[in-house]
Image (cartoon, rainbow, N blue to C red):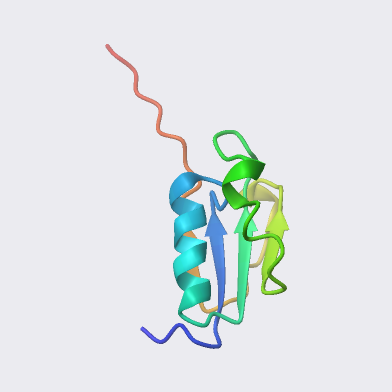
Length: 86
């Protein structure tokens, strides 16, 4: 998959895995990386190093606030897993 010059959305972008995915996309030449996170599990500390990059945009919202996603790829990492013991 060609990453250079493309735009990406990462749900759960302020998480450990989301921030590492953003690092990898930026290093591969992504034109834009949008981080979407409601900060349930993510943190500002995890993405502080990314926020100075003009290619990075942070949206502290839930995915349900987005009606249309335009981009070349989506990293879906924004789901908290809940287990119930029955």
